[in-house]
Length: 205
Image 1: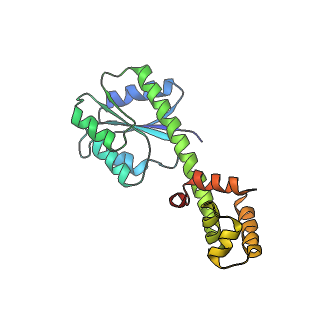
Image 2: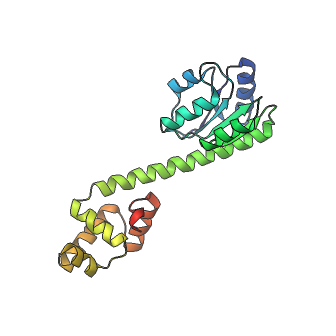
Image 3: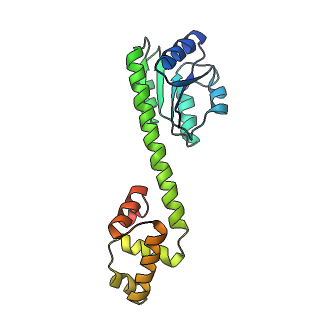
């Protein structure tokens, strides 16, 4: 899946300069003159990062960053400003900014941080997809199978699980076999690993 670098800056010369730099590195880039334009067109489901200028009319870069967070859009954000200040940097990092860079910008350094931001987003999207896939599989289990799964992941033996649910060991064993088949795992170690990887049942572990 191709990644995109979004450039949001009301300064046309700066937009053009950043676009040329990004494209020279073989990266796909899209430019926007305002935060509103960007919000109408950005795709949070594909690998990306966003370069946001701080001082823009209507909605500045820091407000835009917070709006993305409110919308559940986790695109890595790099704030670019000619007016760097500690409060602004603190605010940016408090809301999850990937970096806060003051102008003039080193092209090499900026490209390095862009690649790192995109790599992080690729990994984040991969984990999210894995989580969604596992959650879907777990949701497809019957209520009783979900009970058995929870107890097994907690570390209960088949006998302990049977006693807790007031069922026979044979019945619980049959549930466990179906659970492993439905989730595509071979043993309890893989079952626990799947639960941990997706964050499922983490409060029980």
